[in-house]
Image (cartoon, rainbow, N blue to C red; front, side, top):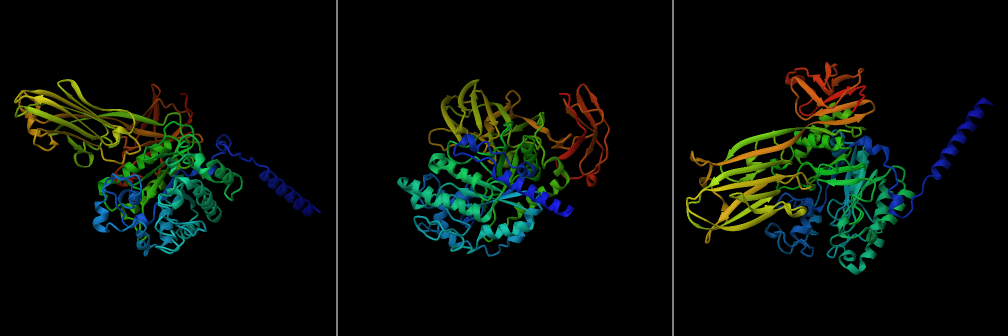
Length: 613
């Protein structure tokens, strides 16, 4: 009888659970209701993800600058897209004028691809979720689909009928399940070359007959943990019928209880509507209380770009610093990996993945499942002075000292300019960043406008200069962090006279000290550099130092409780500490390099912390 009671009791609990689940909130087809959906708990716990960009664009694997190689089709061939300003010489030289982007799909063989190798590598990264591109803006489907996969030039535009002839998404999902990895999907809202999208009159038909059915097909078949839509600038969320689709996702889909999704559902939704706001190559959204993630790559492109140099990639220190910064500010980080067309992952990507994993093995406690503390970071001012021969600055070639970060700094050049002939001189200031040019304290070029003008700046002014007359020159350059911060900092002061091409103003006419006839320009670099980032979990505060603090670490304005204990993750030994004028002073052990728990960014764990701030 007792056993029967327990059986009946268990049945009642199960029925009650089922009824509660079925009576859960239903979301209406409007943003107010959809935006009320809670962020699933796994998302904050995970913190770190990887982003896989692989497709026909991996065959040419080229971008002439430091942009996105996955945009190859729009930039270099198939000239019916709006970006006609891009140089197509590379494509025509190597593939021919008549070679269409679609032809790359048949050259994409993935002959060395082993999804189990990828899953094994990803499992060592420390990342807890992975987003793989199922369909990019080129419209190529990395999965079998029943819904009109074609371009204006080709049909059967998918990886089953062309190229690898495999279900890329299905194969990868199966491999990652073996490693207990959470998988997500990226899907473009629109397609560059789908006939129904190219024709503005049939875009509604594209949404109804291609986008929505494929979206539901992907979700139902693969059951992802995250869905990342993109291409939001192409039309409004009303055009894409985004609220209708999200209503299905949250009410009817098989992933409704655990799915997370981003904010790119139309040109008017980014940063306004959606569960997870996105920051792209920007270092994060900062103090926004809404859930967010930073999307970036180890280099300046998500897709594989053969044209990059080693200096285009983040160093391990820069990579870890960016991860820590985003997590301290309350966000997640998803890092792009661009495999080669043959299915192998570039060695530098593999190296960064393993270096990140090694660091997280020691410091993951300060990352996974943490929240933003009331103070995200502690800054210090860094100033560096040096003598430059000219204003022809490029971070990769003429960077200052390592103490100045490449993404956020200011520099001022001052000198006396003495021309060797009288003439009409045209000065031009070219920069990636904001800049100003002064002559005799008069502002002649001002390139500090707000907005996107700073992306690639150039401006000029003409002025009469007299032979051997001294002129006071001042150039200011401001490198502010932004979504294009993978571009190398660059500023050049150029000049010309009638009959002469523009060239850098030569160092022979600059004097840092005119009276003493010392050539050059006085350069003063300055930056506010974060030296400590904070994260919080339970009653523990974590102080992550981007540089080794020396004999003593001073955390300004941090006052722990009397029962606090402090240690370094990976070492564990309790450290001596004291409080002086509301600052926490921690005695740092002097370790040899072989005793350090990791090579960069060290975490001080402050247990039983109770701030009185």
